[in-house]
Length: 424
Ligand code: GUN
Ligand code: ZN
Image: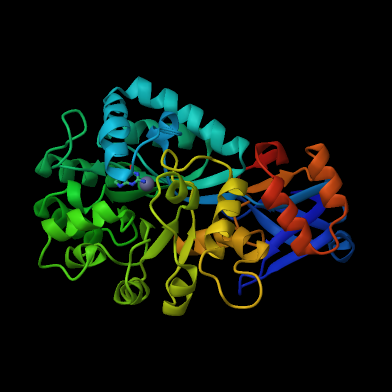
C-alpha cells in the first residue's frame, strides 16, 4: 500500500465535489492485484488507520481523478487545426486523406504512442476513441494502451459508402473484422471494444444492420458514432433516410441505441430525440472545442437536463482543438452560457469537472471503476500543481472557496498544471 498527502478532490454519488484541503489518498492492490483506492478523505481522520503505510508528502498539490475523454480520434492527432468551411469539407479535404495512412500498422503505432503520451501529459487516463477503418489501426492502439496499462476503448471505423478509396471498407468483411477484434480485445486487461459506425451517411443499411446485430450479441461492448453535429450533415441524412423520424432515429431503427452507446455532438436534436436518448440509455459526448472550431453549434445543456439525458465531456480531437481537459471544460462553460436565462451560473466548476471525470465514467457505464477516487475505484489519478504558472499561483492563492479554486484551474489551466499522472 502507498498513501499520498495533498489536497484531494473527488465526487459524491450525486456528482457533488468533495474536497479536503489536507487530504490523504491510500491506494493498494485489490484481490486481483490491481491498484485501487483503499481510502480517501481528510489526512487527520485517516492517518491513524494507516499507520505504517508509506506516505508521500505532496502538500501544495491537488490530487484529482484522472480525466475521462468520452470521444476522441487518435488518428486525427495531426489533423488538429485544419481549417474548413464546416464538417463535410473538413472530412473530405483533410480527415479522410489523412486517415488513409493508418492502413500501415507501424505508422499507426507511432501516432498511437504519441497520442497516449499526449493524453498523459494532459491528465487523461481513459479515452473512448475512434481508430480508422483499418484493423491495423485498432491493433496498434490496443497494443500501445496495453503496454501502458490503460483503461481504454476503441474500435474499427465502419464506413462502406460515400467515402473515398483508402478509407472505404467492404460491408461483409467490415463486420467479420469487427467481430474478430471484439473476440481478440474486448475485456483483455483494461481494454474494451466499441462498435464504431462513423456516422449514418457513410454506412449502408446492411452495414448498420450488421453493427446493430453485433451490438445485440455483445451487449457489454460499447457503440460509438456521431449524430446531429452540423446542419448540412442533418440535411444529408434526411435525404438518405426519408422514412426515418430523425437522424438519431436512424440509429434507433438499426438497434444502435442502448446503454454503452456514446453519440458525439447531439447538437441538432429535438425534444423527441432527447427522450429517446434517455429511454434507450444512450449518452452524448459533448465536444465544445470541436463544435466551436467547426462552427457546428451549441450543445443545449438545459434541454438535455430537462429530458434527463446523460452526457459527458470530450475533446473530439482533431475536430476539437485541444487534448486539455481544462480547455474543454472552459469551452463547455462558454457553450453553457449560450441561451442561459435562469439566475445563477449556467454550469458550476464542480459540474464541469464532474462531466470530464465521474460523469463521463458514468456515461460509459464505468461508474465505480474509473473517474472518481472513492474507495474501490481503480487508482487512476492526477497530481496538479496550482502554482504551475505565475498567474495560476497568484490566482489560486486568493481563492476563498472551492468554486473559486476550481474556476481558476479551469480558466487558466493546461498541461502545465499536470505535475504527474498515476494509473492503476
Ligand atoms: N462525423 C463523421 N466523422 C467525423 C469526424 O471524424 N469528426 C467529427 N467531428 N464528426 C464526424
Ligand atoms: Zn468525432
